[in-house]
Figure 1 (cartoon, one colour):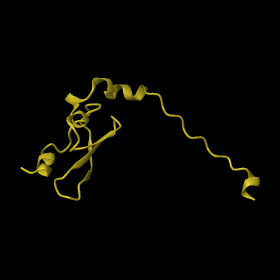
Figure 2 (cartoon, helix red, strand yellow; figure 1 turned 180 degrees about the vertical axis):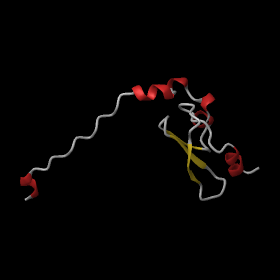
Figure 3 (tube, one colour; figure 1 turned 90 degrees about the horizontal axis):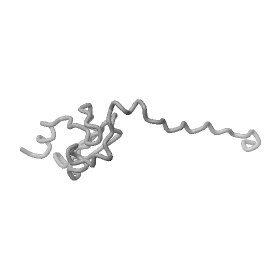
Figure 4 (cartoon, helix red, strand yellow; figure 1 turned 180 degrees about the horizontal axis):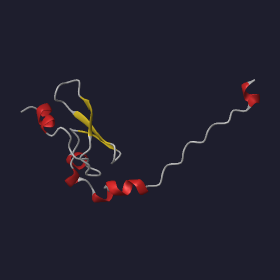
Length: 92
C-alpha cells in the first residue's frame, strides 16, 4: 500500500495537540503520495503527514503542550486590533 492510500485509510487522524477527531484535510502533495496536510480547528494546529511522531501522533506529543477542547471557551481572547484613525491633515 502506498503512502497516499495509507493516509486515505486514516482519512482524518486525531489532532496531536487536542485529541479532537474533527480534523480536516487541508492539502495533498502535488506529487501523489508524498504528504498530506491536516488541520485541527479546535487545537489550532496543522501538521504534515511526513513530520516526526511528536508532531503527528497524540501519544508522542509533549503533555505540556496539550489543549483540552473543553477548556478552549475559557481561553483569553487576543485583543482586537484597534481601528486606525486617519487624520484629515494627513490625507490632504
